[in-house]
Image (cartoon, rainbow, N blue to C red; front, side):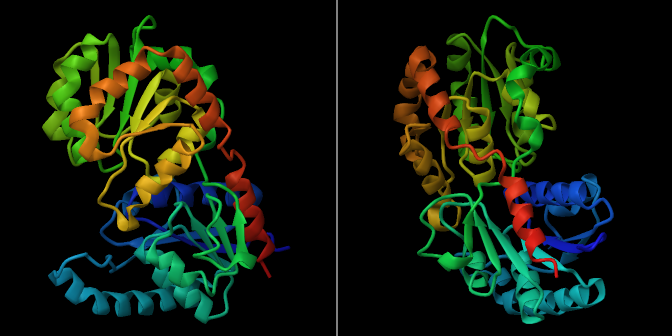
Length: 364
Protein backbone atom coordinates (compact mmCIF):
# COMPACT_ATOMS: atom_id res chain seq x y z
CA UNK A 1 0.00 0.00 0.00
CA UNK A 2 1.27 3.48 -0.85
CA UNK A 3 2.50 5.62 2.03
CA UNK A 4 1.52 8.84 0.30
CA UNK A 5 -1.58 8.24 -1.84
CA UNK A 6 -3.19 11.16 -3.65
CA UNK A 7 -6.87 12.01 -3.47
CA UNK A 8 -9.06 14.58 -5.19
CA UNK A 9 -12.25 15.39 -3.31
CA UNK A 10 -14.95 17.44 -4.99
CA UNK A 11 -18.25 18.70 -3.65
CA UNK A 12 -19.80 21.97 -2.67
CA UNK A 13 -22.35 24.70 -3.13
CA UNK A 14 -23.79 24.16 0.35
CA UNK A 15 -22.53 23.03 3.74
CA UNK A 16 -24.34 19.74 3.11
CA UNK A 17 -21.85 18.83 0.40
CA UNK A 18 -18.78 20.51 1.92
CA UNK A 19 -18.76 19.14 5.48
CA UNK A 20 -18.98 15.48 4.44
CA UNK A 21 -16.09 16.13 2.04
CA UNK A 22 -13.98 17.64 4.83
CA UNK A 23 -14.86 14.78 7.21
CA UNK A 24 -13.67 12.27 4.59
CA UNK A 25 -10.45 14.25 4.05
CA UNK A 26 -9.76 14.34 7.80
CA UNK A 27 -10.21 10.57 8.10
CA UNK A 28 -7.91 9.97 5.10
CA UNK A 29 -5.29 12.21 6.75
CA UNK A 30 -5.60 10.23 10.00
CA UNK A 31 -4.84 7.00 8.15
CA UNK A 32 -2.25 8.42 5.75
CA UNK A 33 -0.50 11.37 7.38
CA UNK A 34 1.57 11.80 4.18
CA UNK A 35 -1.42 11.69 1.82
CA UNK A 36 -1.78 14.49 -0.72
CA UNK A 37 -5.35 15.79 -0.80
CA UNK A 38 -6.67 18.37 -3.26
CA UNK A 39 -10.22 19.76 -3.28
CA UNK A 40 -12.01 20.98 -6.40
CA UNK A 41 -15.11 23.19 -6.07
CA UNK A 42 -17.17 25.86 -7.82
CA UNK A 43 -15.16 29.08 -7.92
CA UNK A 44 -17.91 31.35 -6.54
CA UNK A 45 -19.30 29.09 -3.81
CA UNK A 46 -18.70 28.78 -0.07
CA UNK A 47 -16.25 25.87 -0.39
CA UNK A 48 -13.62 28.39 -1.56
CA UNK A 49 -13.59 29.73 2.04
CA UNK A 50 -14.54 26.68 4.11
CA UNK A 51 -12.02 24.22 2.65
CA UNK A 52 -8.90 26.41 3.18
CA UNK A 53 -10.18 27.13 6.72
CA UNK A 54 -10.10 23.36 7.27
CA UNK A 55 -6.48 23.30 6.09
CA UNK A 56 -6.76 21.92 2.54
CA UNK A 57 -5.91 23.42 -0.86
CA UNK A 58 -8.75 23.94 -3.34
CA UNK A 59 -9.03 24.74 -7.04
CA UNK A 60 -12.17 26.39 -8.42
CA UNK A 61 -14.14 25.56 -11.57
CA UNK A 62 -16.36 27.98 -13.48
CA UNK A 63 -19.58 26.01 -13.08
CA UNK A 64 -23.14 26.51 -11.86
CA UNK A 65 -26.29 24.43 -11.86
CA UNK A 66 -29.17 24.57 -14.29
CA UNK A 67 -31.95 26.92 -13.15
CA UNK A 68 -35.55 25.75 -13.45
CA UNK A 69 -36.56 28.73 -15.55
CA UNK A 70 -35.11 30.37 -18.65
CA UNK A 71 -32.18 32.51 -17.53
CA UNK A 72 -28.92 33.83 -18.91
CA UNK A 73 -27.19 31.42 -16.54
CA UNK A 74 -28.83 28.47 -18.33
CA UNK A 75 -27.71 29.83 -21.70
CA UNK A 76 -24.14 29.90 -20.32
CA UNK A 77 -24.33 26.34 -18.96
CA UNK A 78 -22.84 24.51 -22.01
CA UNK A 79 -19.90 26.93 -22.02
CA UNK A 80 -19.35 26.57 -18.27
CA UNK A 81 -19.57 22.78 -18.53
CA UNK A 82 -17.02 22.65 -21.34
CA UNK A 83 -14.70 24.97 -19.39
CA UNK A 84 -15.06 22.84 -16.24
CA UNK A 85 -14.39 19.58 -18.06
CA UNK A 86 -11.25 21.03 -19.65
CA UNK A 87 -9.98 22.45 -16.36
CA UNK A 88 -10.78 19.17 -14.55
CA UNK A 89 -8.78 17.30 -17.22
CA UNK A 90 -5.79 19.59 -16.58
CA UNK A 91 -6.06 19.25 -12.78
CA UNK A 92 -6.30 15.44 -12.88
CA UNK A 93 -3.48 15.07 -15.42
CA UNK A 94 -1.07 17.17 -13.34
CA UNK A 95 -2.12 15.94 -9.86
CA UNK A 96 -2.42 12.22 -10.79
CA UNK A 97 -4.84 11.13 -8.04
CA UNK A 98 -5.20 7.49 -6.96
CA UNK A 99 -8.90 7.93 -6.25
CA UNK A 100 -11.39 10.76 -6.93
CA UNK A 101 -14.26 11.24 -4.46
CA UNK A 102 -17.43 13.27 -5.14
CA UNK A 103 -19.87 14.42 -2.45
CA UNK A 104 -22.35 16.16 -4.77
CA UNK A 105 -22.81 19.50 -6.48
CA UNK A 106 -22.08 20.42 -10.09
CA UNK A 107 -18.31 20.82 -9.65
CA UNK A 108 -18.03 17.19 -8.58
CA UNK A 109 -19.87 16.16 -11.74
CA UNK A 110 -17.17 17.52 -14.04
CA UNK A 111 -14.29 16.10 -11.99
CA UNK A 112 -15.75 12.60 -11.60
CA UNK A 113 -16.73 12.46 -15.27
CA UNK A 114 -13.16 13.20 -16.37
CA UNK A 115 -11.67 10.82 -13.78
CA UNK A 116 -13.79 7.90 -14.97
CA UNK A 117 -12.94 8.69 -18.63
CA UNK A 118 -9.26 8.48 -17.65
CA UNK A 119 -9.74 5.17 -15.83
CA UNK A 120 -9.16 6.59 -12.33
CA UNK A 121 -11.29 4.94 -9.61
CA UNK A 122 -14.19 7.10 -8.41
CA UNK A 123 -16.37 7.06 -5.29
CA UNK A 124 -19.70 8.89 -4.94
CA UNK A 125 -21.03 9.80 -1.51
CA UNK A 126 -24.78 10.43 -1.81
CA UNK A 127 -26.23 12.17 1.25
CA UNK A 128 -29.91 12.28 0.33
CA UNK A 129 -32.77 9.80 0.27
CA UNK A 130 -33.49 11.07 -3.26
CA UNK A 131 -30.29 11.51 -5.30
CA UNK A 132 -29.54 14.57 -7.39
CA UNK A 133 -29.22 14.42 -11.16
CA UNK A 134 -25.40 14.71 -11.13
CA UNK A 135 -24.90 11.61 -8.99
CA UNK A 136 -27.52 9.60 -10.87
CA UNK A 137 -25.64 10.24 -14.13
CA UNK A 138 -22.20 9.54 -12.64
CA UNK A 139 -23.18 6.38 -10.78
CA UNK A 140 -23.13 4.20 -13.91
CA UNK A 141 -19.34 4.54 -14.07
CA UNK A 142 -18.52 4.91 -10.35
CA UNK A 143 -16.60 2.12 -8.62
CA UNK A 144 -18.44 2.64 -5.34
CA UNK A 145 -21.54 4.57 -4.29
CA UNK A 146 -21.81 5.18 -0.53
CA UNK A 147 -25.39 5.96 0.44
CA UNK A 148 -27.12 7.15 3.62
CA UNK A 149 -30.59 5.70 3.05
CA UNK A 150 -32.01 2.29 2.19
CA UNK A 151 -33.84 1.39 -1.03
CA UNK A 152 -31.84 3.44 -3.54
CA UNK A 153 -31.52 0.51 -6.00
CA UNK A 154 -33.90 2.29 -8.37
CA UNK A 155 -31.33 5.07 -8.84
CA UNK A 156 -27.96 3.33 -8.57
CA UNK A 157 -26.40 0.03 -9.69
CA UNK A 158 -27.01 -2.28 -6.72
CA UNK A 159 -23.71 -4.15 -7.01
CA UNK A 160 -21.64 -0.97 -6.44
CA UNK A 161 -23.77 0.52 -3.69
CA UNK A 162 -23.05 0.32 0.04
CA UNK A 163 -25.10 1.69 2.95
CA UNK A 164 -22.72 3.73 5.11
CA UNK A 165 -24.64 6.76 6.37
CA UNK A 166 -23.39 10.33 6.06
CA UNK A 167 -20.06 11.56 7.41
CA UNK A 168 -20.60 13.71 10.48
CA UNK A 169 -18.33 15.78 12.70
CA UNK A 170 -16.74 13.37 15.15
CA UNK A 171 -17.09 15.88 18.01
CA UNK A 172 -20.86 15.20 17.97
CA UNK A 173 -20.44 11.65 19.29
CA UNK A 174 -20.25 12.79 22.90
CA UNK A 175 -22.40 15.93 23.08
CA UNK A 176 -24.36 14.84 26.13
CA UNK A 177 -21.20 15.01 28.26
CA UNK A 178 -20.75 18.68 27.32
CA UNK A 179 -23.95 20.21 28.64
CA UNK A 180 -22.26 22.15 31.44
CA UNK A 181 -19.64 23.57 29.07
CA UNK A 182 -22.39 24.43 26.55
CA UNK A 183 -24.58 26.31 29.06
CA UNK A 184 -21.50 28.28 30.12
CA UNK A 185 -20.42 29.00 26.52
CA UNK A 186 -23.83 30.37 25.47
CA UNK A 187 -24.56 31.95 28.90
CA UNK A 188 -27.80 30.00 29.20
CA UNK A 189 -30.15 29.59 32.16
CA UNK A 190 -29.88 25.96 33.33
CA UNK A 191 -33.46 26.02 34.66
CA UNK A 192 -35.01 26.78 31.24
CA UNK A 193 -35.42 24.64 28.15
CA UNK A 194 -33.39 25.74 25.13
CA UNK A 195 -34.88 25.85 21.64
CA UNK A 196 -32.34 25.58 18.83
CA UNK A 197 -33.31 26.82 15.35
CA UNK A 198 -31.18 25.70 12.39
CA UNK A 199 -31.71 27.09 8.92
CA UNK A 200 -28.63 25.64 7.21
CA UNK A 201 -25.37 27.39 6.39
CA UNK A 202 -26.93 30.08 4.17
CA UNK A 203 -30.15 30.40 6.13
CA UNK A 204 -33.82 29.61 5.51
CA UNK A 205 -36.12 32.51 4.68
CA UNK A 206 -39.43 30.92 5.67
CA UNK A 207 -38.06 29.53 8.96
CA UNK A 208 -36.62 32.94 9.82
CA UNK A 209 -39.93 34.66 9.03
CA UNK A 210 -41.72 32.16 11.26
CA UNK A 211 -39.40 32.70 14.25
CA UNK A 212 -39.49 36.50 13.84
CA UNK A 213 -43.29 36.33 13.98
CA UNK A 214 -43.44 33.83 16.87
CA UNK A 215 -40.49 34.96 18.99
CA UNK A 216 -42.57 36.67 21.71
CA UNK A 217 -44.96 33.73 21.87
CA UNK A 218 -42.02 31.31 22.14
CA UNK A 219 -40.50 33.33 24.98
CA UNK A 220 -43.89 33.29 26.71
CA UNK A 221 -43.65 29.47 26.67
CA UNK A 222 -40.62 29.78 28.96
CA UNK A 223 -37.91 28.74 26.48
CA UNK A 224 -34.64 30.46 25.65
CA UNK A 225 -33.68 30.59 21.98
CA UNK A 226 -30.51 30.03 19.96
CA UNK A 227 -31.41 31.04 16.41
CA UNK A 228 -28.96 30.34 13.60
CA UNK A 229 -30.47 32.52 10.87
CA UNK A 230 -27.72 32.08 8.25
CA UNK A 231 -25.28 34.60 6.85
CA UNK A 232 -27.70 35.85 4.16
CA UNK A 233 -30.21 36.94 6.81
CA UNK A 234 -28.09 38.06 9.77
CA UNK A 235 -28.37 41.81 9.10
CA UNK A 236 -32.15 41.50 8.88
CA UNK A 237 -32.61 39.60 12.16
CA UNK A 238 -29.68 40.58 14.39
CA UNK A 239 -31.82 43.19 16.21
CA UNK A 240 -33.58 40.29 17.97
CA UNK A 241 -30.36 39.92 20.00
CA UNK A 242 -31.69 42.86 22.03
CA UNK A 243 -34.40 40.61 23.48
CA UNK A 244 -33.61 38.78 26.72
CA UNK A 245 -33.42 35.04 26.09
CA UNK A 246 -32.70 35.26 22.34
CA UNK A 247 -29.33 34.75 20.63
CA UNK A 248 -29.24 35.27 16.86
CA UNK A 249 -26.16 33.86 15.10
CA UNK A 250 -25.17 33.96 11.42
CA UNK A 251 -23.18 30.77 11.74
CA UNK A 252 -22.30 28.32 14.53
CA UNK A 253 -18.69 27.18 14.88
CA UNK A 254 -19.18 24.85 17.85
CA UNK A 255 -22.07 22.65 16.71
CA UNK A 256 -21.21 20.13 19.43
CA UNK A 257 -21.88 22.71 22.16
CA UNK A 258 -25.00 24.13 20.56
CA UNK A 259 -26.50 20.62 20.30
CA UNK A 260 -25.43 19.86 23.89
CA UNK A 261 -27.27 22.93 25.14
CA UNK A 262 -30.53 22.28 23.26
CA UNK A 263 -33.70 20.51 24.41
CA UNK A 264 -35.83 20.89 21.27
CA UNK A 265 -34.63 21.58 17.71
CA UNK A 266 -36.38 23.17 14.72
CA UNK A 267 -34.40 22.45 11.57
CA UNK A 268 -34.36 22.23 7.81
CA UNK A 269 -33.92 18.63 6.67
CA UNK A 270 -30.85 18.77 4.48
CA UNK A 271 -29.00 15.46 4.59
CA UNK A 272 -26.14 16.57 6.86
CA UNK A 273 -28.49 18.15 9.38
CA UNK A 274 -30.62 14.99 9.48
CA UNK A 275 -27.55 12.78 10.02
CA UNK A 276 -26.25 15.04 12.80
CA UNK A 277 -29.64 15.14 14.53
CA UNK A 278 -29.86 11.33 14.45
CA UNK A 279 -26.50 11.18 16.15
CA UNK A 280 -27.22 13.74 18.89
CA UNK A 281 -30.74 12.37 19.45
CA UNK A 282 -32.71 15.53 20.19
CA UNK A 283 -36.48 15.89 19.68
CA UNK A 284 -36.82 17.72 16.38
CA UNK A 285 -39.43 19.43 14.24
CA UNK A 286 -38.32 19.34 10.60
CA UNK A 287 -39.44 22.14 8.27
CA UNK A 288 -38.18 20.98 4.85
CA UNK A 289 -37.22 23.47 2.18
CA UNK A 290 -39.63 23.02 -0.74
CA UNK A 291 -37.17 24.80 -3.08
CA UNK A 292 -34.58 22.04 -3.49
CA UNK A 293 -34.18 19.63 -6.39
CA UNK A 294 -36.61 16.68 -6.35
CA UNK A 295 -38.04 17.96 -3.01
CA UNK A 296 -35.41 15.78 -1.32
CA UNK A 297 -35.60 17.59 2.04
CA UNK A 298 -39.20 16.45 2.48
CA UNK A 299 -38.17 12.91 1.55
CA UNK A 300 -35.24 13.02 4.02
CA UNK A 301 -37.53 14.16 6.84
CA UNK A 302 -40.27 11.68 5.92
CA UNK A 303 -37.77 8.81 6.19
CA UNK A 304 -37.25 9.77 9.86
CA UNK A 305 -40.93 10.43 10.57
CA UNK A 306 -41.80 6.97 9.18
CA UNK A 307 -39.64 5.51 11.97
CA UNK A 308 -41.34 7.75 14.61
CA UNK A 309 -38.14 9.75 15.08
CA UNK A 310 -39.27 13.32 14.32
CA UNK A 311 -42.17 15.67 13.57
CA UNK A 312 -42.61 17.09 10.05
CA UNK A 313 -44.25 20.47 9.37
CA UNK A 314 -44.51 21.70 5.80
CA UNK A 315 -44.03 25.41 5.12
CA UNK A 316 -47.62 25.80 4.01
CA UNK A 317 -48.83 24.41 7.38
CA UNK A 318 -46.76 26.74 9.58
CA UNK A 319 -49.28 29.54 10.08
CA UNK A 320 -52.03 27.21 11.28
CA UNK A 321 -50.08 24.37 12.87
CA UNK A 322 -46.85 25.67 14.34
CA UNK A 323 -48.01 26.89 17.76
CA UNK A 324 -50.21 23.84 18.33
CA UNK A 325 -47.48 21.36 17.38
CA UNK A 326 -44.68 23.13 19.25
CA UNK A 327 -46.66 23.62 22.46
CA UNK A 328 -47.79 19.98 22.46
CA UNK A 329 -44.19 18.79 22.09
CA UNK A 330 -42.75 21.21 24.65
CA UNK A 331 -45.24 20.11 27.32
CA UNK A 332 -44.94 16.36 26.69
CA UNK A 333 -41.73 14.98 28.16
CA UNK A 334 -42.73 11.43 27.17
CA UNK A 335 -43.06 12.46 23.52
CA UNK A 336 -39.68 14.22 23.66
CA UNK A 337 -38.12 11.08 25.13
CA UNK A 338 -39.60 8.72 22.52
CA UNK A 339 -38.63 10.95 19.56
CA UNK A 340 -35.14 11.20 21.04
CA UNK A 341 -34.77 7.43 21.45
CA UNK A 342 -36.24 6.61 18.02
CA UNK A 343 -34.12 9.09 16.03
CA UNK A 344 -30.98 7.78 17.77
CA UNK A 345 -31.59 4.27 16.44
CA UNK A 346 -31.18 5.69 12.90
CA UNK A 347 -27.71 7.14 13.54
CA UNK A 348 -24.71 5.70 11.71
CA UNK A 349 -21.76 6.93 13.78
CA UNK A 350 -19.12 5.00 11.78
CA UNK A 351 -20.08 6.40 8.38
CA UNK A 352 -16.84 8.29 7.73
CA UNK A 353 -14.65 5.30 8.60
CA UNK A 354 -16.74 2.99 6.42
CA UNK A 355 -16.59 5.35 3.44
CA UNK A 356 -12.82 5.67 3.78
CA UNK A 357 -12.54 1.86 4.01
CA UNK A 358 -14.18 1.71 0.56
CA UNK A 359 -11.90 4.46 -0.82
CA UNK A 360 -8.79 2.69 0.46
CA UNK A 361 -9.73 -0.55 -1.30
CA UNK A 362 -9.53 1.28 -4.63
CA UNK A 363 -5.90 2.50 -4.26
CA UNK A 364 -3.99 0.56 -6.88
